[in-house]
Image (cartoon, rainbow, N blue to C red):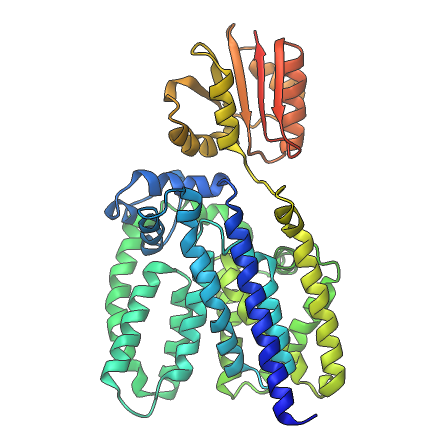
Length: 477
């Protein structure tokens, strides 16, 4: 086949994959599902704080880069529906990362089959699509990590370009306030420039000043350290005893419902060995360094290497996997067939996850706003709303939207799943008419069945529930 035709096929394939990735991200975003608990916790801060207050410690143990939070809040000034407004920055970052990943693949991969495979994984990966429509900064983490690593290839290291270096330095200085993990990419670029003793080191003058202020901010204002304990499972033990389980949990998260996870392990191992074999080349160093740094940060208990907190590393993982196609065994037709089959399998399992339900308009997480409207419609002024502990944050945000008075609800703090425990606590309630709101739970099915069973033993029980056991349960005592 003539080289020109091969090149055209390559660009068509890339364009189709990038368009598919963009459309899937927009489709998920456009669905506009209600916020779930974790999103509600951040949305409460965005709804009730000023721009300046977003630099202060956030309520509900939220730790979000302040400029990213301000970006989300700014969108709320122009878009009325909060779910669309606050998630818009994640969508913008998710879409912008698609052509950026292609650019990074062009710099780090030498095989067109491998490039198509990597772009396919990045465009169609479920978690990257999902976090392009969630009120969290992880999509921004991916975008800025890629941007900073790519910037290394576009710096003229032989001469001092004052304007260019000032612009890049300013970008680096701002990035750390948008994405904490962007600091890891900056560190890698800094080390590479330092080793080569290049003039590009002058780029880091402005970021150094910003970093000094940033360290003061992190120490005094950003967090109380609660999330460090929350992500404890993401830290590697001193003897590496939990390392295999940690890697397995990450694979399960990044490739949900994909049964042949051994292929992921084998491809990553083969790609990593190939990368190490030719480590003297910049395109391989820039892929290998983030992996080593991520492991080191986890081992030192600085930053977890765990599920969504490590989403920024996923593009590098895909590119290392794609390095496999630079082995002689995968050249030409064999590589095309294997890449095509694997990509089809990865894609099939992505669609299996949620997109069928989205297309059928049956995909839900929490349905708190709908159930609160039902409560306003059904309840009387003397009725009391009971909110189980894990639903409380979701309720707090949407209660403001529904303009419910704070005194009309009580929170049951223990997490109650078994019927005997539910009965023991609810029997202590005084006589009256009650509604129980259940939309978020560690084991919603079990909690729903226990609450339903208890309600049926009381007077005038009524159950409003969907197929996912989001429920409003009424009873009288």
